[in-house]
Image 1: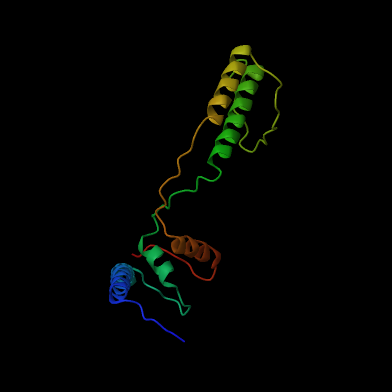
Image 2: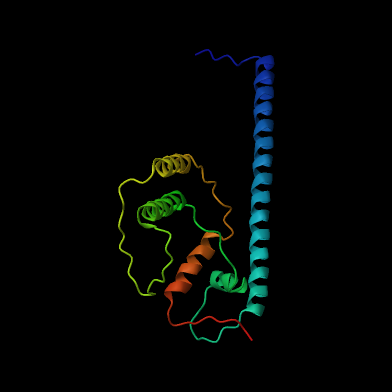
Amino acid sequence: MNCTLPSGDFLRSVSMANRHFKRAKKTKKAIMKKAFYQINRKIKIRSLKRKKSIEKAREYVKIFTTEKIKEDEILLLSKGLKYIPSPSTKFAKSSIASDFNEFARKLRCKYHFDKGDIFKRHPFLTKSGYKPELANNAIETYIFKTKVEIDNITINKAHDNLTTLERKAISSLKRNEKNSYSKSR
């Protein structure tokens, strides 16, 4: 058996190539390590800010119950009872359409039944819900064009001013009937 070893130039070129790959791996590893460090740093800063805000919130919220209250509920209550969360835009278009349909019904009823007389209604009079067929041509064209415009409306989603945990805290505070919440005096 004759075994020949490769020449020195070949070994040198292989080791240079390996060195190049090792250097690329090292730089990639260093970049990944730096990114991991930055992400962990951001998470730590975020958790520290949250702890500080919870401590600050505990100063403003007085709890007179033995029941355990979550941190998110305390943060939410510290915003005050007059705090208004941004509304959901989920059913905005359908609610606008239903409101306009009610307005159109009132317009048609006014056209059919209004004689110009002013009379006082009984405060407990139940509404009939009567839907007249068609009214004046001008009224019907107005109703049709407005419905087309309502269908073409694009509703932009409002910026949510609560976190998902605070949204859950609102629902849990609403469900809890044992506790009562009032403004401090």
